[in-house]
Length: 350
Ligand SMILES: NC(=O)C1=CN([C@@H]2O[C@H](COP(=O)(O)OP(=O)(O)OC[C@H]3O[C@@H](n4cnc5c(N)ncnc54)[C@H](O)[C@@H]3O)[C@@H](O)[C@H]2O)C=CC1
Ligand SMILES: CC(=O)C(=O)O
Ligand SMILES: [K+]
Ligand SMILES: [Mn+2]
Image (cartoon, rainbow, N blue to C red):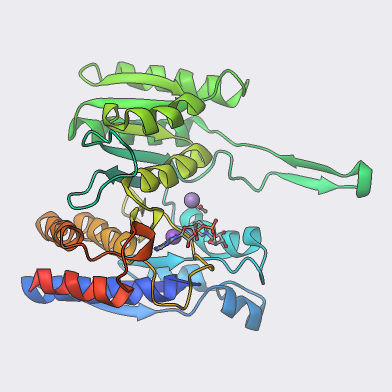
């Protein structure tokens, strides 16, 4: 029997709740299929670990993770106790970079059984391909002086390699979908990085003559995602723009608590990392009311990446059937607990 060895990092807040729920669903799928099983190894890394040791993960954490097939992560952050730039850069972003997970794939679509908060959602179905290794998220810059003289500089780093890689990935994905790529730019405000981004997009588009392509400024694009989300197929965006657009993608589905994500090492040299779009949600942590659907859908993306697309579809169908039964957590306007939603999905699968 095939065994997938998965490193599990529940992280902080609701990550500790939704990750075990999604693991139950994935174990159930594996058991139904019978040809493989998951072997989960959980690491207690995150803000509690930081408060005890001064580090978000041990020094050999990356080495340890490299020994696994994939990584399944919840969320990172306890903003009242650890500054967010320390917690995220010490664990989540560190893993993304050290594992060369250069592409972050984040789908959003109108789900059956779940009304969108939009009046005219028109059956939208798009995927954001977010550049995941550079861009506006950089360690280049600094702070100096204090008081009225204080200065902060944050450089954005755009390489041809990283930019082109994200764009080619988006065009290849469009081939398997509705044949269109939209590029998120802001070349009217950012005078170097985004004109460069636009140039690379135009060059890459020439290699894909059968795929339609459009460029939108990020501000207008955000508005279009509310007004006519059905117009989009694949959207390619820089690290920060993609981050923002994908919380919006979650919101127009119904809640950011359902949006999934996959941080992919497309060369498959290192493990990829599967973690939902949402954060640790300190406002609802520990109450048993977190929506597990984002983490479960993220598990579906891991199944797809492992080559089990049919099983992945089963997971999404079970989620939609559960929503259609009206079994929803509070963020979706329901009254169900996380346990009840998880049990309903497990029932759908049996
Ligand atoms: N990938 C990651 O690990 C991320 C970590 N964070 C971190 O998480 C912490 C909180 O950040 P926020 O900006 O508040 O974003 P957040 O995504 O944690 O929460 C935003 C809002 O959405 C709700 N929400 C999120 N996920 C939900 C779920 N599964 N079910 C029901 N409601 C849900 C929360 O209750 C909150 O009201 C911070 O430390 C932040 O840095 C934020 C985003 C991503
Ligand atoms: C940090 C964050 O919000 C994200 O990567 O989505
Ligand atoms: K997350
Ligand atoms: Mn985000």
